[in-house]
Length: 338
Image (cartoon, rainbow, N blue to C red; front, side, top):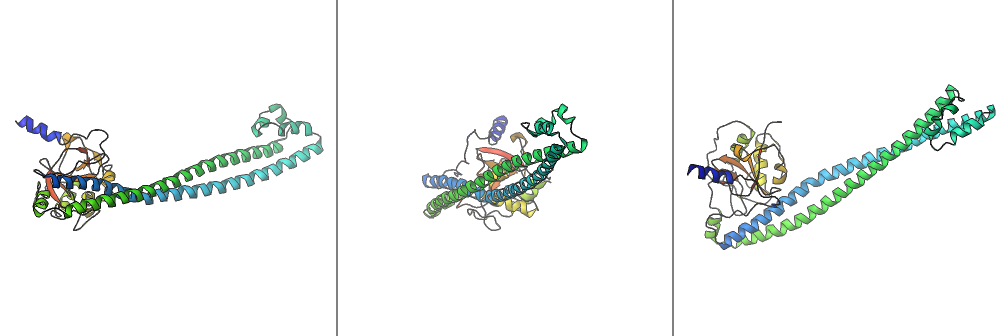
């Protein structure tokens, strides 16, 4: 029997199958069709809302990158202008050398030198260089260097212009994504709220079942995760509200962000971004304070309290509570000091 229980517990932490897009609906034990339908609406709304917040969070990042690459492209264009000015000055010196060589009667050799396909080609003609004085050779070398610098500056400017264009396109797409996902989230949240408003008192009580709101707050142990869990446990009973980050109402990732803020640790706003923070934990090594993620990319998150249970802000119509860990766990992460 003990082996069976251990296997069942471990199964809760098996990674979700590849391609999972969102967390499963949070359906309380004994739910009727009305409550189940609301849970499904809540799951859709949570996924859409998390995606919308994630897109909005990325928008200033993408815009800053676009600004940075645009400035780099402007600097590169200025460098091209400077390099071309240097090339023009070097060309004048070569032109003067041509004139003086003509007057000295060495025009045939220098003419052949300057008519080579590339600047490097005529410098490679050692037999011709032998006819050129050291001073004149320095003039030619400066022209060659200026020509190479101008070519390099032009290539760099073209590459940076491409980067700037790509970054601007990324920012525009992110804005489109943010606008579209926000509209979808608004529709899904409105549908979920409408379904919640139609629930009877008994159905509302059923929705909130399957967990407790009086879990002890004096969790023993050290580490950032345990410290954040202690803070989060003080919010038990706080209502779930879409997009809320505390201190009196929360959504799932808002609760995690608020808890870590209480101990002086910054966390991203949305579950999918929080899913990338800290170190990956094998299911067999899960510890109190670890973050438990659902969906891939994550659309729901909670904090493990031990004994197969975790603290979460579950869904609209429910409150922050400690509940059994459900299936569809996709990732476990542990936040450690940098």
